[in-house]
Structures are given as C-alpha cells and as structure tokens.
Image 1 (cartoon, rainbow, N blue to C red):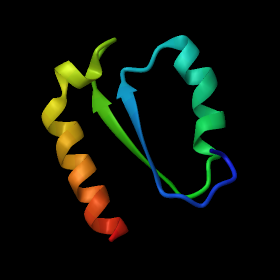
Image 2: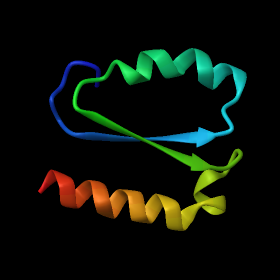
Image 3: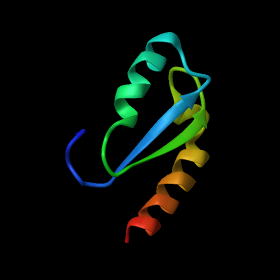
Image 4: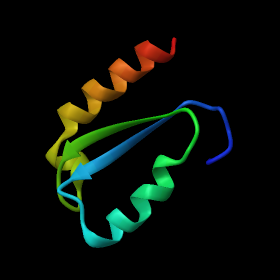
Length: 64
C-alpha cells in the first residue's frame, strides 16, 4: 500500500486513540492518499455514515 500509485482514501476518526496516533504517521506516508477526518468511536461507520458517504462521493468525482 505504501508504494503503489493506486488512489487511496483513508478515513481517520476523531477523536483519535493512543494506538491510532502511533499508526497514523506510517499511514500518512502512503503515496496517492487522501485523508478525511470523521467523528466517531469504535463503530465510526454507524456514527457518521453521511459524512463517510459524502467524502467517498467527492473523492470518487475527484479521481475520475
């Protein structure tokens, strides 16, 4: 994932937890990646489905 030029969309939850902060630096080093912050806890897709959907739709339109 870190080396490929394939477009990637990374959803980062806010607020972040301790282990996420440690992995975040590595994840941000991936090539051709867009990062989006969304609010949520463990099941972020259930808490912020609309924000995820809008972000995904916008990202797809940018990549076309």
